[in-house]
Length: 376
Image (cartoon, rainbow, N blue to C red; front, top):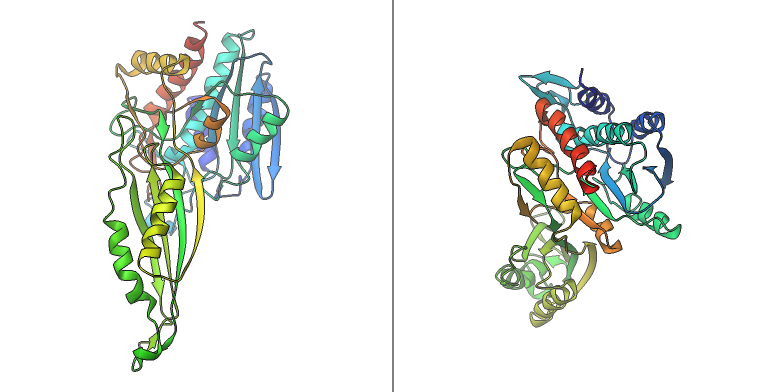
C-alpha cells in the first residue's frame, strides 16, 4: 500500500474529535524521529501540539496542519462508520479524510522523502500540528508560535494543508484569508405580560428596525484580492417559551468576514453607531478570530505553482474565499503563508472522502515544493 494512503487510514481510524488527538501526533512523531527529525509535544490545557524540525539554519519551511476533526454526527447517517477508513471506487472515506488527515499524511511522507533524498539540505524543514484547529483555537497553533518566537525560531515559509481545491486537484491555492469578527449582542428590554404591553418593553420589537438597518449596509466593495465585507446573523433568541410573556432580553450572534478595505475597529464602530441610533439598551461583546492576511509573490508561491503544474498540468487560481485557518496565526510573524490541499466538497459532511490518487499526487506536490524552493 502507498505509504501516504496507509498513514491516512491509520489517522482516520483514530477518533480525534477536538481537542482529543487520540494518539495521532505520537504516531507521526515516531515516523519523523526515525527519519532524523527532532520532535516535541507541546501541551497547553487539553490541547496537544506537535513540533518537528529537521535542520537548524534559515530559511525555515513549515507544513502546518491539524489532527483534530469535527464530530461526525450520527454514525447511522454514514454509509460506513466514520472512523473506519474505507476505500470505495477510488475514494477514501472517513471523518477527516479531506479535512485534513489526508493532507497531514501527505505532509509527513513528503518530509520523509525530502530528507531521505537530501539529508544535508539547506535551511530547515518542519511540521506543526495541533488538535485545536476545529475548536476555539486558543491553545493550539497560536500558543506554539509564541513558544517558538520566545526561543528565536522564526518561520520563513508556511504551507497549510487545508482542503483548497474546488473541482480538481491543483485548481486553487489560498494566498490569504479574510478577517473574522464575531459579536455577541444582548438587547435589554422589560419583561411583562403580553396583555399589558404598556408595562413592558419588548426587545424583539426594539431590535427589528436595527436588524434591518444592519443587514442593509454595504460595508465596502472589496478589492482585487478580497470579496466585499459580509455581515451574517447566525442566531437570534428571545422568550421564555411561554406565549403570554414578553421577553426581557434578546440575544443575537453575528459574524463579519472582512478584508483590509474596512478594518475591524471601523466595523465595530459602525455597528455600535446603528445600535445607538435606534436608542437600544444593549450589551455587546466582541471577539476577533483573526485579521485578514495576504501573501504575495515569493519563493514559496513560485515553488508550489511549479510543483502543481508539473504534477497536474494545471495553473492554480489564487483565492481568499472560505473560512479562517490557522494560517492567520502565522502571517503576523512575517511568514509567507499559502494554503493548498485536496478537494473541499465533502468537508464537515457525512461520508467525507478524498481521492486515493489525489493523496499520492499531493505528496509529490508537497515534496516537489520543498525541492524547488532551494532548486535541489
